[in-house]
Amino acid sequence: MSDRIEDYALIGDGETAALVSRSGSIDWLCMPRFDSGACFAALVGTADHGFWRLAPAGGRSVARRYRDTTLVLETDFEHDAGAVTVVDCMPPRDGPPMVVRQVVGRRGTVPMRMDLVIRTDYGSVVPWVRRTKHGIRAVGGPDALSLHTDLPLHGEALTTVSEFSVRAGERRTITLSWNPSNVPAPEPIDAEAAIRDTETWWRRWSGRATYEGPDRDAVLRSLITIKALIYEPTGGIVAAPTTSLPEWIGGVRNWDYRICWVRDATFALYAMIAGGYLDEARAWQRWLTRAVAGTPEQLQIMYGLGGERRLTELELRWLPGYEGSAPVRIGNAAHSQFQLDVWGELLDATYAAERAGLEPDPEGRRIIAGVMRRLEEVWTQPDEGIWEVRGPRQHFTHSKVMAWVAADRMTKLSDHAPHAPPREHWGALRDAIHADVCRRGFDTGRNTFVQAYGSKHLDASLLMIPLVGFLPPTDSRVRGTLAAIERHLVRDGFVSRYTTETGVDGLPPGEGAFLACSFWLVDNLVLQGRHDEARRLFDRLLSLRNDVGLLSEQYDPRAGRQIGNFPQALSHIGLINSACNLSAALKPAEHRAAG
Image: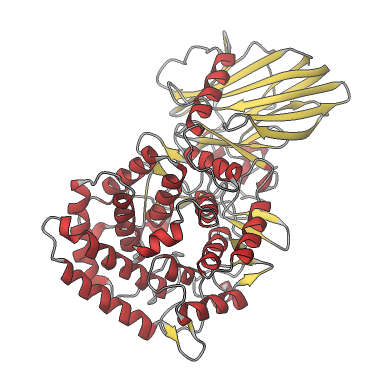
């Protein structure tokens, strides 16, 4: 049922998002939040699990685009009888969540067909459907969806169908809205005005962008994508709007990414600050502070959209998975893992925000003082690491480096943190961690840092060593590590996180190149002064974007396909930061490393 991952485009309203295929089918939509049950789940299932197709009968799509700097999608279709454009958008939330679809006749008279299969709770519930004055209303448990249109509707095998024609210059619109099933359906809206207002809203937002360097169009599209992944009520950034799109087609590495990761904190801050979006950066920083509030022992690596802590992982066994990649999971068991790197990200984000001029949060200062006391107790322990391995805990080198980052940034923040020991105390901790990493995490015989203490394996997370200022890029150990990663983890020109065949993560082998790590390599090459090589790799990464500028989590070079959850915030954040590092603007790599 599903198209290739890169054949989808994103529309969203600041609280949830939908994926629209090149063929005019919405195959993924969760309402009312990113993490709600999907009413269209064909992306990870079949047509029986819900979709909404709107396209010419027997036509073909020939081009699509966003209207300039907006999230209003246009898909052009050609037909023997003429041509039409389908316009899709989700108006920024001012009432119930809603999808607006419009068919615009451009040439001739084109026969159209709409097929609507609503299945709530991830395709498991066939709702009760009845006709209304303005269309239909579907009710399934707590969910109700209302289709409003003046088009003719009829039922075919549990599918709502409309067959109609559109002449040149004619416009026909359809809206689908969600509301709790215990309240009345919303009244129809002026769909034409909703499209105009949505376009105006996005133009105003994107007009605030301050980045004027090279690759501005790519940077702006990535900023728009990140904005679409921000849960507006809280400021939390979801890693992606999807779950269980596989890291390897047919594999089991299928995770729910509709969650907010602490490890993305500093990267995201720099991307938004570089783009000129201080309000979003401030909201993200405040979300982070609220989410981690609690006893230091309760610090997690990820939280829900509002800071929720229980993210219980479940397998939806009725869904066969994207191209048979099962299981389909919701929730994420990694939320209970122990990962040292979150201390570094939390402290680094706090410090970066203050350096960028965002006003300090007194509550945040109290929180970081508490979590740092906890770090003193646990930094010598093994953990699950940045990649959330489901194998045994190890002393991962990157985790220790990020513990060093936490101590280093706390040294600089301690003068203003209430009830915290003086900077000399944190300086001593910083020096102890640094010495431990250099002694136990570095292989002198091979002149490279290694994945974990005592290991012979490499890990792309080691690219962070110069990016966070642990060692300068000119250090021979950094150069040796970069050379080793280029020899052993760069495949077909892109960076793998690590060698999955080692079994370190407790999962079967097989995954694509991790795009964020490839952007980290760009940043390392810039710091090494290898600008031409950095530019070539960056251009290759740009070429992986689909026709509307979107990137997933990973890329399979051999199959030439995007894989993993889509679109991926960290990939687009990496694009923005690398573009800045290659430009004359704020250079996140240099700024962050300088501390």
